Length: 160
Image (cartoon, rainbow, N blue to C red):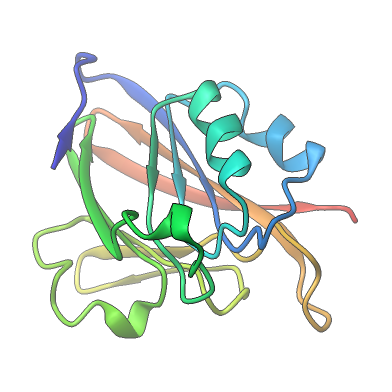
């Protein structure tokens, strides 16, 4: 598990998923200034991770379409702690199988449907898809704010 080194205070985590090889400039602009970035899988191209990793510390999970050689060592799930808050990321929420136990925030992608829900004391966040449009679903990213252990999240739609 990755641990942050910054003292408790306010943290901004940019969340992106399902880029499928397309990293939109609008998504980059919305992620700029993040203390951490989480990519929820279906990345599509290695250079997307290079760009995001140059912006902020990056945690990434492998999506069901990430089958290329470069993606082989990307984990299917990841756990990290930011500002004293435990987060768990997995591409498809159906693959959680209880691995997120103890996490306060669960991040997933896969469905391309942006959503925020709170259940059983956990915040579930799907940022939607920031890549090519699928059906009539919005193009979006998300933001998690952690302030002294309190967590809020929002979906940010990208006009495309």
